[in-house]
Length: 183
View 1 (cartoon, rainbow, N blue to C red):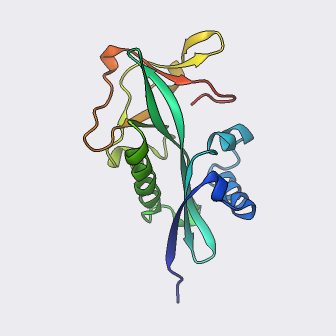
View 2 (cartoon, helix red, strand yellow):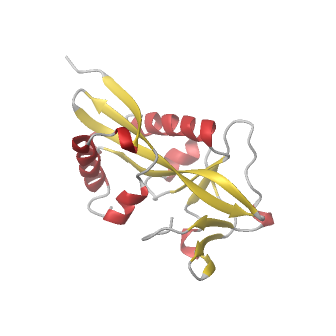
């Protein structure tokens, strides 16, 4: 008999050390070794959705707070990080389970949701109403604002129910600085 799926929503401070090791192992496997320490660091400090099948961690995602400056206003943004589903469980709806949970956090705590999608993950986000940002992307770097043209076309935004997405015609989205890959 197959064990029932369990979904947990926890702050980083509530995720046990052994469980965080499982998260890291899942991310390493799902991203085929292309998920570095700085990427992992970016996924910490916010809320994590953990999906288990019995004792096995099969999916994960987190949302952390970022500040995004647009048209002279700093937007409190829930930035989705480290969404992964174990390879043998992909295309079974688990990515949607993770996103539904994370979108609930964004809807309750932020004015905007944002993420950087891989080519493999883009269909999941688009299917849930996330939109590719149609304007410039930048970062508020140590030397001032810098354009990140490589992030354009893969950065998605989402407005919680009743919210309005920023207008790309009003200017770029400038994300707050962080070490490693900025987005």
